[in-house]
Image (cartoon, rainbow, N blue to C red; front, side):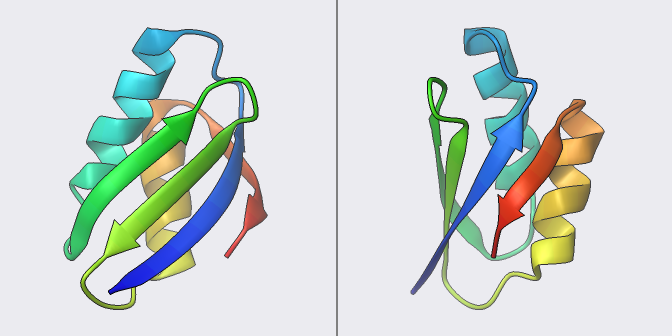
Length: 70
């Protein structure tokens, strides 16, 4: 099992959290997504390695930006 944390900007509400959770959760191998709205931290748990580029692309698809992280 692998865990990586990213900082995402632009999220302002629970709808934002749901959008990011849904998009990142669709990445192959991802088993969990935890979003902390106040800090912008998005923790991704997976059963193998997940490319940071895949997470970045999923976050951007949801309409937000990864500013730091794995």
